[in-house]
Image (cartoon, rainbow, N blue to C red; front, side, top):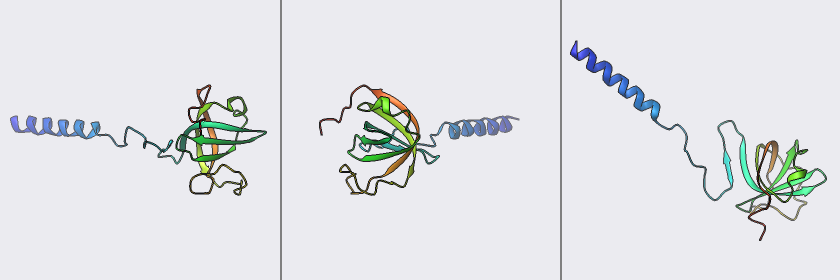
Amino acid sequence: MQRMFLLVLILLCSAAWLQAQDQYPQHPPTGSGQTEGASGRTLVEGCLQGSNGSFTLIASSGMTYQLQGDTSKLSRHVGHEVQITGSPSKSSAGGSTSETSPGGSQPALSVEKVKHISESCKNMNK
């Protein structure tokens, strides 16, 4: 009886220990301004620029993203720091803008969600 109780206790403790282990890292990568979730969505924080339905997001790393999709909510946040949740997509800009990412090509995000961070941009001194 004592052995059975000890075995059950060990199994319960092992199960609790396994459940407590983190499956995903707690902190996003530093310095990139971008994280990617398990669902394929990308989260980018930066300064929103643009007008007339053509918007770009300049991330804190200096990377510039062309924003596509439902951009109707973006006009009121131009010049503000925002957090964009979206799915990566092909850029239709074709490199015609002067602000591109460090690699020369401008990645695009299809906007799904916009979160306002600040009334002013931290990285506007570039």
